[in-house]
Image (tube, rainbow, N blue to C red; front, side):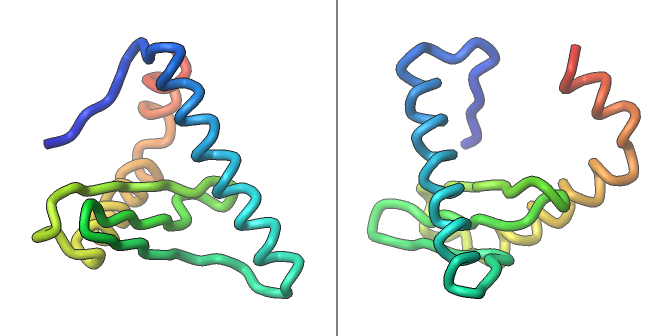
Length: 98
C-alpha cells in the first residue's frame, strides 16, 4: 500500500517538516563528525525506513510498514525512481512544478 496527499492537511505538513528537520540535523551532525551520509536503514517492530541520496542535493525517505519488504527492495525502488527522474528531467520538472 502506498499513499500520498495531493493537498496535505496542516497536521501532515507539520509532520513532514519535522521529519525533514530531523534528517537535516542528522546530516549536519554527520558532517561535523567528518562523515557523509550516503544511505541509512532504520528498522523496528513497526516499520522499516530507508534514507538514500536521490539527487546531488536531495535525500529520499521511504517507509514501509510491511516487514516482508527488505531494505534492499526499498533501495532498488529508490534506484529505479532515481534513474527514471534522471532520464525524464524535462517531463518530471513539468509535473512537479505545475
